[in-house]
Length: 523
Image 1 (cartoon, rainbow, N blue to C red):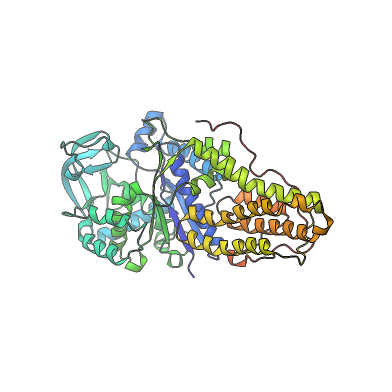
Image 2 (cartoon, one colour):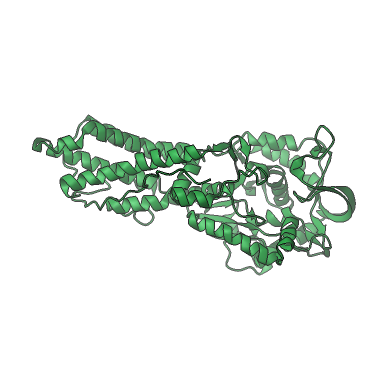
């Protein structure tokens, strides 16, 4: 089986990361960890988009060179990924010479086969979005909306990509490949965007207007426009044209490609990832079987509104990770949104998710399970031969949780995957309440049943710690250390079976996994 190749959008280095950036990278990291634990080799690529007019202007305003400016902003992203335990295999930076060589070789290839041409153009240009606008972008009043920022009328010569020649192919591809875009309803957005007369794509900017970019190899008076630069990262850092470009130390493209998952936000589905990108690949000679799959996530809104610096409602993930721990934030980001749809960020909800679900539900189960075993049996477990209906019911919940969890996670339904694992947590907490180990401990005649109850609780926690490992890797490792069980190298979900803990297993010392918070989150 080929490696599971997963990528994210590369983040624009014009401002530090917000919670939307964190969500996307944690989502991809959770899937990468899940796939590894499910038996797949994984290659996870993420990175930064460092070229463009906005970067050039921001650098000038800051009194820095563009490279120094993007290096500084990039550090904010890499520091956050380190804090949130986002463990990628490849790092894409568009100023990397490896990338530049592939972009130029790709453009030369398209030029040589007649897919690029030069012509003059007069039109309206959005400085914010760095693109020429058409009448389709005008509102009912005939004006360009606020989302385009400052719009200027420009007359200039540029290079164009024959995008229009491939639009009919793309329509047919989308209709014949229902799994191309997840969730499936997003495909209609793309097909609707393809209606009307197709236009070719401007792929350059004159160097006197934009110098911070990759020069066109066949006309150095121009630099490459953002999408042919940014989108190419998915193949340049995967080893595409490595031999032709003299790039070394990259993956074997023939075994890695296509990507099983380009994880992107819904705002860059059309036109960038669902129109420009597959057409670029098609023009380069990629077959239908080599077109990557798009996983399109929604937005984290605040009180129903999209986060915006102008509205002052941008959520800083560094603050949240400092308050709720990195794993507490990872849990909230995966639990409170369904992949492909929007969700509303709420201080009250993240506090409740931490205090009630993590501290009160998950952490409390671990703490009292180990505490009771230490108090009544010096932490030594003995499964014994005692059994009853309550034991059997808990074992059944544990047994059914793993296949349901795997099914939901494979389908990108992370919230339901967590819910499947959480059935064990809920059932085990209810099991404590119904079996009353503290009462059993008072009567020597119930010794065998008490042994069985303490064993069932610890065993259930082993299963929980494995299932929730992709979501909260540090917390689950800490839990296993307290249980005294180390997950073997290469351990997979299919290896989970009842009886992971053996006769005489020694539990460790209980330490609160998620100490309860008495103060609200800082805004």
